[in-house]
Amino acid sequence: MKVLVTGANGQLGQCLQELAPKFPEFQFTFCSSSDLDITNESQIESVFSEVKPHFCINAAAYTAVDKAEAEPERAFLINETAVAFLALACKKYATTLLHISTDFVFDGTKIAPYQETDAVNPIGVYGKSKLAGEQKIQALLEQFYIVRTSWVYSDYGHNFKKTMLRLGKERGAVSVVNDQRGCPTHAIDLALALLAILNAKNQKVVPFGIYHFCGNKEMTWYSFAIQIFEKAEMKVEVTPIPTSDFPTPAKRPAYSVLDRSKWDQTFKKEA
Image (cartoon, rainbow, N blue to C red):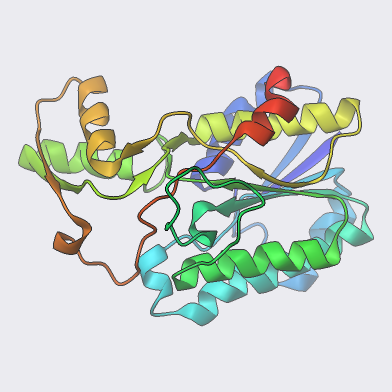
């Protein structure tokens, strides 16, 4: 089975490349932004016509949450328009699309984990652009998996874990927000979750649609930072602060916990 992966140089893309040799049943084609600009419809057509993938994992996205507030056109170009281009190519080549979305499609006002059927209400440009991409896929395709995830970290790229380790080493003390809650998700686990979907779809009919996948432990950024330093065996002073003490251009959801029970019930035996 041929699998085309966009965004190959991102956290998820690099984790998928790391895991690919362990899944010889799939023939992967990894495309970074220099190999495939997903905002260029003719480039998408060229790659799809050559690869003819059975699956496309779209790991490419505009993820600069704060920067998106200053350049919404760019965020929507990559997270909505380009996603529509990919969806149209998937439709033309009978390719099943696996698209990565985000907890930021919710406003964070719930006090219980968000389910796939909960009302969406993004509060910033990034979340709005990702929701728009989801809506394009649902309007254009019948064969798709939209996988919403949260707080992704890994040894690759830019992420909270790497930032904490750098600041801890440089300063020996950090102040971290303690009133935003979510579930940190290792990009390797997310990659394995997507591969579980591929395996399941390859073997039998699996319901298409939206799924939530995230780490299975709820915490704040403050408690996540403490965990990071403990695992790294670093002595760093961590001070909890409210969001109001750390203003950012984009407002964050105060509660970003996703309910992943639908994914667990459908795919966990495959993972």
